[in-house]
Amino acid sequence: MKALGGDSGIDFKRKNIHVAETALKLQIWDTAGQEQFHTLRVIYFRGAQSFILVYDITNPASFEKNAVWMRDIKMKAGEEVEVVLLGNKCDKEDEREIAKERSGEGRY
Image (tube, rainbow, N blue to C red; front, top):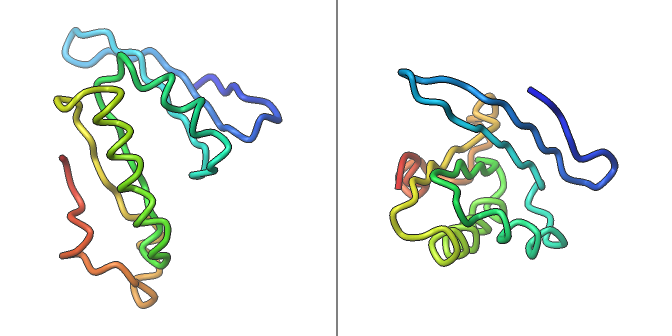
């Protein structure tokens, strides 16, 4: 993957891939949820076909922030966009603060 972003605080990677004879442009934007990138992130929502939102299973605040992301995604990218919600830090299951039932982990 080609890394871009430099010292901007955003980790951005881009890669062209082929899946079942379909060419796809994969872009991964890691803003670590930083609020200063809110305006920038919604600019790139248009035209996107799917999103992966990640939260820390040991940090309720990181989970709650996904409600804002979901609202922005649906408003800017459209209701038909696929969204996957993933809990990370699964190696810290004994510190889990977001119940699996509450998280709704999966596709929306």
